[in-house]
Length: 410
Image (tube, rainbow, N blue to C red; front, side, top):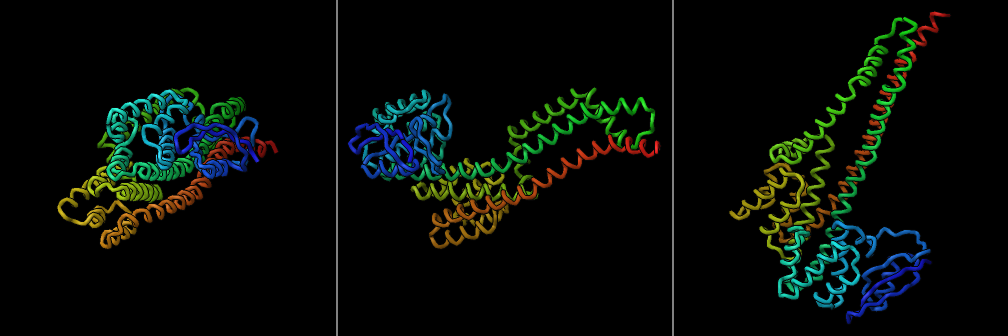
């Protein structure tokens, strides 16, 4: 058992603080709910210990302790606000409780602004938009929740969406970390061999005056060139970084990159699945919250990372205005996975579009995980093999003359 400190509020809006024992944080949260309290902050007490828990944590210090607003800040704010509104607290009072527990200055300032706007009669969605901290997707979800009289439900669905999107993004980023580290280590190892090991033997071979094998001459020349012209290598890396920055910021260059990326082996398939999962989840969440399809498509277009796929969504929305089928238009673009669009076409024809969008999102979440595992299974041994071969070539180039000289002596 571990000791947890908590801050919670009663349904009447009274603040409570204290400690309780629980096996894990999720059990501490359940105990507070069982007592009729709304947990706002739960953290392991000093000297406490726990085996860990993979569930999202409703904490204050860990999420609001810095200076700049981050995605976890927004998720925690949304999660806590949804819990308090679901318990029946008015919005003004819920924001007031947030102000009492927030420790991050930027979050405190933002929530204070929101409370002032709400008290002056501004719609909550409009107040969120004025802060500039919330996406158009987020604002429209809250706006639809206000229109339907269910802000707490809209916020709860937002939390679920944000957590699932974060999980998907985390899977892709995590998959890139190990190959990147492996690549950097390989490059640094080769540079170290060429700069510090090869020159030692180069001087020795020069003193002996022996005829060197061709591979040894190439490796020696590479080491000497790197030692003399290292600034060229750094300059080339700087130029590459500038080109990458240009491609990412220039609209035409980015369109070309996104179009070509979809045709790359492995990478193109993974990119298409990631965007399909994002498109399905975003559109399904907006439709579930009551946002009209045309407006939802325009919002979803802005959430997509691939410019070509985003443009296809915008063109499909224009076609929809003219009475054409959404899925048929997207199928004609040939950038989205055909299987997913055929599923959505069934939903379009049967009136179950919203349900099938969520199902497609779940399917492609699993597809992304599978594709990532397959990429790692291929990339890791390939990188290790390339690194080993490069190092073996350098070592072989150094040892080969020594072996030849030993044979001559014998």
